Length: 264
Image 1 (tube, helix red, strand yellow):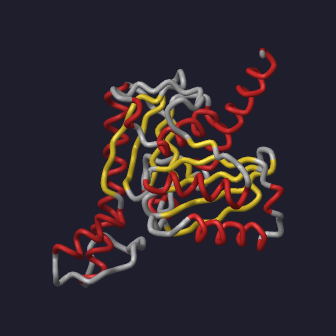
Image 2 (image 1 turned 90 degrees about the vertical axis):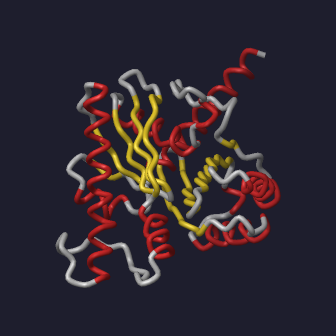
Image 3 (image 1 turned 45 degrees about the vertical axis):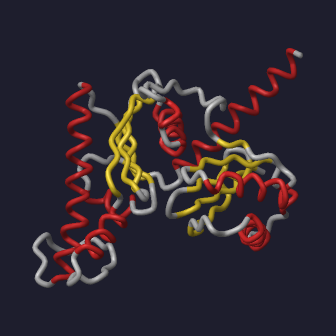
């Protein structure tokens, strides 16, 4: 079995694969101060609770946008699973050309999402990832990562609003019944929610206009099911797009290793 781990700034999403099938998944809070021992115990307990044996996991693949957690992840994999993890980064075979001015500056999660989306549609597409940051990326018809836009995510935008406006209360992010709020809580909810709906639809339209394309738009990330329901530009929500991209990258690198061994 393959353990796929996506480490974001807010959450860590884990998926357990049997071949190409995602058989179970978990979501943990990202806490950089936690040790490899702490995360190792949590993950092995999750695996056991799901009815599997830790020794059944034969490979681990990781994408991480929190650099301080990379060493911890390697230590965790070696200590608890006796495995060297495949970490998405420079030198890893992805099969996707990156047209960014500085390819190493692209977040691993953005590349992983692009690989999964292109493998799924085999055509130009746009990926909207509602994470700590909201990213909107374009993949070309040839399967190239073209680039994209980055905006503050819903949660950190709300946090900034509450911190800087002392009279405003903390609220839950929900879909409001109407745009015009009749109290402070509803007004903030309307501004945050519909503001991001407009942000996403507006950027997607501009990307399509600039590049002369009308393409499939897929959303992923923790808040995707909530916000995408009101976005006219989004065609599909795929909650596990990043995990699927990690599985594909692991598969491609495993095949590469087999070819190298066969030639030596």
